[in-house]
Amino acid sequence: MDTIQNSKKSFFSGLTGQILIAMVLGAILGIILHNSISTEAAQSFSNKIKMLATVFIRLVQMIISPLVFTTLVVGIAKLGDIKTVGRIGGKALGWFFTASFISLLIGLFYVNILEPGVGIKLDDIDMGAASEVTAKTQNLSFENFVEHIVPKSIIEAMATNEILQIVIFSIFFGLAAASLGEKVKPVIGALDKMSHIVLKMVNYVMNFAPIGVFGAIAGVFAVRDAEELLITYFKFFGSFLLGIGTLWVVLIAVGFIFLKGRMIELLKRIVGPLAIAFGTTSSEAVFPKLTEELENFGVKDRIVSFMLPLGYSFNLDGSMMYMTFASIFIAQFYNVHLDLGTQMVMLLVLMLTSKGIAGVPRASLVVVAATCGMFDIPVEGIALILPIDHFCDMFRSATNVLGNALATSVVGQWESNNEQNVA
Image (cartoon, rainbow, N blue to C red; front, side, top):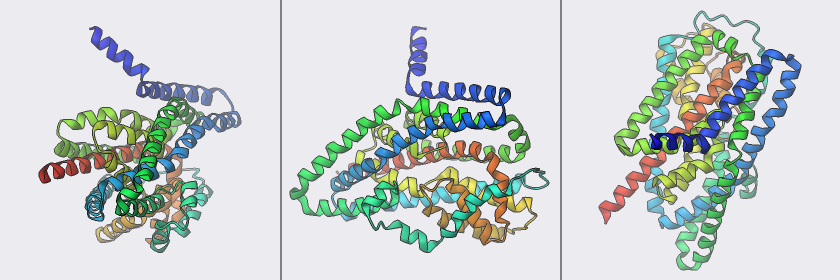
């Protein structure tokens, strides 16, 4: 009995418990204010309280660039050669594209079976609200994606937290360092020590997580009538949750296949990062903490430092599922018929275009808008899903974290097995 009480006490006194409590308190405060003060006052409160979330996310963002650079360079230097980097990179990209394809298919399946956009009545939709999102689609093309991969300045890439560009530079830097051998050991040693300092900073920053989550949740519920929104979008949101739930079942089942009983330990370790991503709608906000938890789980630091940055650019499972779902929902609303062949082409287009938008605010919506334009679906239809998008973003951000944690853990185990076989 004492053991149960102690475990409950440690849970609620730990970071995860504090985050969940902050979410509940934030929702309660937001709902009370929404129902008791004027719209203008609620908006003013929301703008101010959301500063808590903004400060927390900015604290995380300030350590992402040095963390990615130092850990990835040290990891590659420890890997030792291009052949090993290529082998791990090949496994990573194979996993990412398979997971993305499955996620897209799940969205495609449920939006066609449940048809949430057929016969739905949405009144008072502000079509002008979509202009901010659609304005970003003009720079979304394969050519721009290719140009965007390669940094013209590592300083600029770090200043803007362009993870993919930092990864490219770090790979070249790490391979060059590995090829020079003993000469650069002091440099690699210094970077290794720097990475540990940054990881220590992570522990300090995470103390602000409950405050940031509280601000984010309170700000949303203060200005949005969640009950009315969920009733209006019941069919859309319910269908989306069914799709996300299915994706979670698939990801966790795959985890048990590859990790077996250790999957339970992995899930326990990433509860905190999942809660932060859910509360702040930002998977980027948990990057440093997820790095730490995966290393504690037993994945070698060189694998974590290589896989996670790539995953944040190429492996956004929740966002992928949402993209097909939202695109075809808009088509259904406007009675735009898309046969199965056209939908499969759309799926492949999404597979490619979505890889260039890591770090873009509301990235999923940008890709959805661009895809609608390519298939003659009214782009302004993006305004249909804007009111409910924040709540959908909570679930897809958490799903992105789960997908990247699983991918890193599985590839890490493959590499461990490979090393044991060689030995």
